[in-house]
Length: 191
Image 1 (cartoon, rainbow, N blue to C red):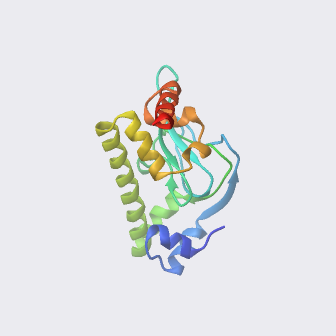
Image 2: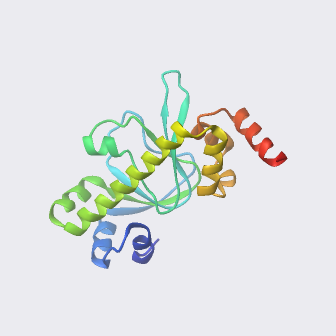
Image 3: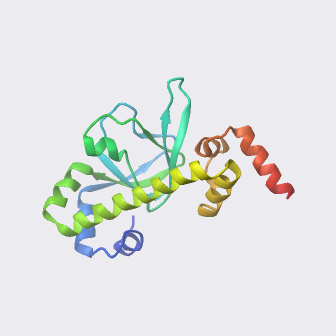
């Protein structure tokens, strides 16, 4: 479980009353590793607030290859926002990598609350802004950095990434093969 102090530290100064309202439309869950929360082609209804563990989201190519789009760690919101906003089938899979604890937030109820509660609406805006900032940062990295630079940035942002996430997931996230990632690691150790 978590409290409003931890929540406010991550998402701005949230009054206790607002925090309790969001908590009231949420369900605390313990989810095992390798569990799909949002499945490809299914219309999602939940937004997830990670408390512990690691989650990933990925797409699947026509050939069946998986490409990791993002990793989620504690105090990240995760969920197929485009599908939630459009009330449409998800084109992205959200899956736990490790055992996780999280809150499942009822998205429809959250949106209804946004219409009548300016503080909930402000929180929702903050969540969307964080998602956009992360998305834009990722796009810039893919365009402007080589694989070694992307790996170093990932390690800077998440120092324990090699212990938390399997190598093949990291390689997919970096848009390289596991063999290329091994070579990058080897060169880094040698220098």
